[in-house]
Image (cartoon, rainbow, N blue to C red):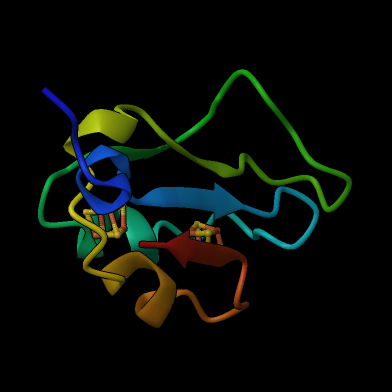
Length: 77
Ligand code: SF4
Ligand code: SF4
């Protein structure tokens, strides 16, 4: 059985750590609750950057990207 390329693809979220200011807007916006602030990291601005906790649950809705005031998130659906 073969699968189309589209079926194999899942949305990919990327957070630019150097731009993120740890405001948490994306955490609130995500309907799947799969974004958190990574308290184990501090970026050059002194903030805990956002990170995706479970890529497999992402539906590619783009709410996180839309909410981010600093355009730190890109979504490849
Ligand atoms: S694209 Fe949607 S589901 Fe995926 S991380 Fe962003 S808000 Fe959550
Ligand atoms: S909304 Fe943007 S700046 Fe705020 S925590 Fe999320 S990625 Fe960082």
